[in-house]
Length: 232
Image 1 (tube, helix red, strand yellow):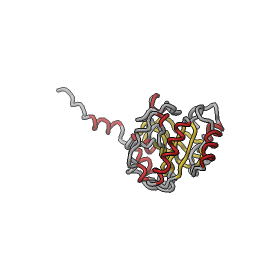
Image 2 (cartoon, rainbow, N blue to C red):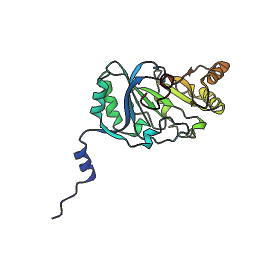
Image 3 (cartoon, rainbow, N blue to C red):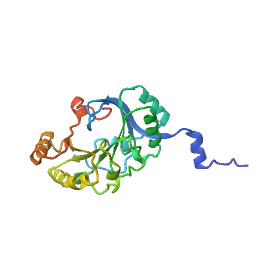
């Protein structure tokens, strides 16, 4: 008699009894972005992204093969750096459903968790203790129409909204967004220049000229390790 082939879900359960995540890289470094810049941080960069921003600086997270890691293994790695922040980033981390189990485990261990997201996927399921760093894509990214419409309602004063600005046109667009954004959210606002397209000094001058109530974000890790493109 021909042996019965297991159903796909049964086979998957047999091979991977623990929750699995597709991981691009993990590393310990200095947090280079957000209002938490400068603090030691353990990074978990998950693989895969549903957007293709024109200026993406982490395209390897969706172009290169991922490593399968269990949630428990990632939690174990984080325990090696007990005093560090933990940031989950990508790619787009919310594409993988098991990220919520990872977040639960980190919070249960008393860790401060940052999550960086491209804003296209609902934040409704995230534990409010997670510090959400949400991009609002500007026109130069070519992805500015992909924002999830309800996400601003889930942001708190501890969360951050980041505009990555690649041109004067992006800056004007972001500035015009501020008035409407203030009606829905009291999260902190970050303006960050795209490296090689807008000089940090120029963006600073525009912010000062217009007296905007936003925080200028420069990538600290790029200044510390200019020759490294990953692992920082």
